[in-house]
Length: 91
Image (cartoon, rainbow, N blue to C red):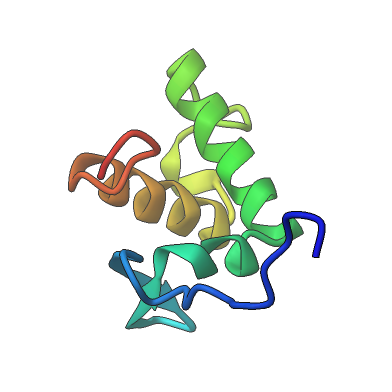
């Protein structure tokens, strides 16, 4: 069969589980399923938080009270996840 096998390895074997927030609820998914949750909205939110972290400044002039609520929520959520060990380099 030219080096190909017809057997499939189950994703669950050796695949760790982790908690993610979906629609405001914490759910457990397999690590192999993470890419399914990385849509355009996620990358937009991640980019906003990353620029906040990198430059140490808010995305608009003024203070926290002048930002749209969804931007404050994005920064708070991402910062909380980062500080609790859910960053890119966590296991």
